[in-house]
Image (cartoon, rainbow, N blue to C red; front, side):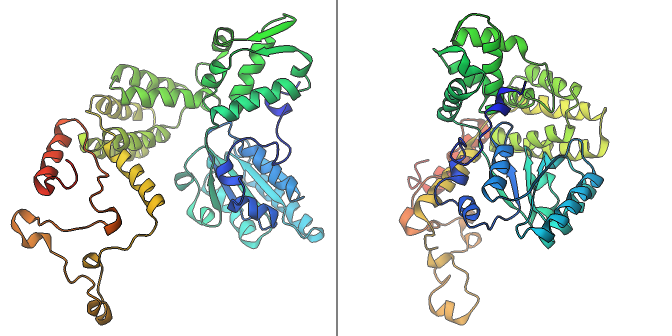
Length: 423
């Protein structure tokens, strides 16, 4: 029998749950589908958020031929075979066939190169799905010919709707007497992954022969946790383990961090995948509390790339334990998020005249750059002047953290700016 997740896979956009930011009303992708002007796409997001379902629905909505291959077990020959079939289809069909490649990040350069000509000539419309950042995993020539859409983990409301839909509409579950008394454990175990959620629901339901099944948090935790795998880099535990790994470093526990590192490496995880996560963490969770963290993480990435396994495990262990023992600060991470929100709210505010470039005579006549004060001409290389647009002047975006290094930064900024930014 098909798994529950396959049995209730959505067949059209009305049944599709979540991702309103990319297929909601008036979204660019929805308009492209309605106008039958679909570009080649890369769908980037964690497992179980609807990448495959969305690709199937798009092809169905556009009534286009649909070809699907997995990068895990396909090679250049498979790609060429599909492109040849698509070329034959194009002779009789005006609309370009859709080629969906699941886990496209697993294709090497030559495999991705084999797609270029077909995408460029319009033989196919490519939809690639990836759980990895396409900037790292998709070759630039192919990436430049695709639009990237970021899919998010499903929200609690979406996941609850999915549970209710499965219990009510699935051919198998709808024949049982199922009472959803509590849903929090199912949602927590899913981590925003619809497939994981439905697997947990199905395991729970199938675990009892009772005529009436009452789903509670206690029952779910008891049944589902007994059925979780230790680690599978291609499976559901992949994101659970990397999540525990990151949170252990963030929580300054080198013991737990190196344990999860070992779990991943023993499970066959790509060392460069781990090294990339350490690079992000060094800036997001440590930042200016210890700027050396980013330097070490960057050197770790380079060294792992050069050395490879099994010796790379030693380099990774050194970096992991160092990062776990660093003072922590997310001040830089919060600052850029706040700055993004501020830009979204205020739009394209005018840059103050004194800060503008003045390469032409007209710009100089308009006072571009006239009142700019060159900091190095003043004592201690500083003089107070306004750098933010008038509408938001005095707005504090960066708040140094509570650690030795950033406390010094706070003192320095307070000395320079007095009360202006509230340091």
